[in-house]
Length: 246
Image (cartoon, rainbow, N blue to C red; front, side, top):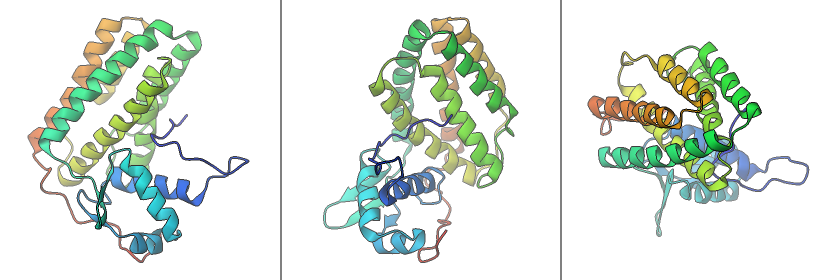
């Protein structure tokens, strides 16, 4: 079960995704993964050639991603990948703790047995994935999908589209920081599976206070390690080569 994206672009009748929709997801994935670097200039024609999309579809996709704060639009200068900074990461983490804990409390209050089963299933799938594989590998993609699904499942019963929307926007931003740090530093020793297990158990036991405490600690530990790495000004060269289709 993959979560909905932060943007909800329209599809053609019959559920066939438009070229713009596909372009949004390709660009989003490459920004979050760090293939497109912070502050990198996003030239529409070069990207259109790289992805094989029409320039109009790329331009619309970039405009949509501005609303998710992944892209910055500059007057008369086009688009750039949004910058990163230590202060922004700290602010992002504070906002994420607030939004996620509010959503988590509501999910614990409103969630039914089917929701509990979804949480347990998402945790089981995540626990079967390779723990924090190497960046860019197929295992990393699988782990990232399972990780996102697990965190979405925890709050899926909150009965608020707005909380789910902002949670997803903040998740993508947090994942982007984590991936950028992973590209420049080796993995830190940390028992992430144990943290996820503790969260799952607290939620299933309907212990909102403990669940929120564990959630906040989970996010804050990630941020602490990223700030300790101090890699935000040492981002590697982009992996995408404009003009070469993926």
